[in-house]
Image 1 (cartoon, helix red, strand yellow):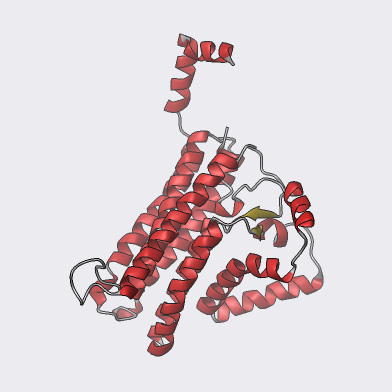
Image 2 (cartoon, helix red, strand yellow; image 1 turned 60 degrees about the horizontal axis):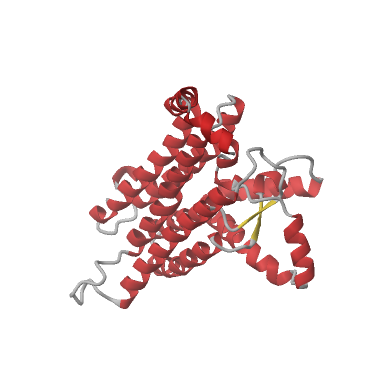
Length: 313
């Protein structure tokens, strides 16, 4: 180790280090920056939702700013899924890409959904000396949104310090709810809320808005939990499946095309609840759980773009 430090301090080692820092994998970095810009744009559009005075839709059928912000979160997921695959295909993995990916995920899957919740519920300015702005509900919503953003940061940081392998293991589960899953739950409920308003179901929409605050807190805690969540791509979309399984996928696709807002929201909520419900349903002894924990592969955050494993040197 001492010899390695000496070699790194030599002029040759310093030149190699500078050369490594001065070169960036362009294609994967562009995908990651696309993810970050989607998060930035989502925050921008969400901040403009007050300009429409609560109207669910614009004139000529354009999306409401909150709906546009939710859609941008989903587009960010697409970029997040692509950057790791592009890095592997072009063999341009780097620790720089891993760090950039974490920062982009924090914006798109951490800050943007938290701000969406605040704008959707329409709180004022809590902790100010005004009865109009300051209420216990406003305070609770602001604190829950802050808890969500903090838990997302902890989720990403925990992965960065736990990952040790640069390869992509063929695992089927991972620890804690991935941040795209949490962000997708929030964004899909925003779309559902706006759809209900557009259909003049204001009473039901208000109920969904209140429930959404509780769900936001639940998914925030799920991100930092040790619950095991299924790797959707590896478990359900790779390899061979039965005929009944294929029929179920066709039914899911039909529902998605027929009632997309309800289907997307239902799918993300079910996924977020799958791990805690599964643990309660299949309650096992501590000895068996300890053996399974030792046998499980290391969490690789594949649902968060499968990028930080593929980009780590």
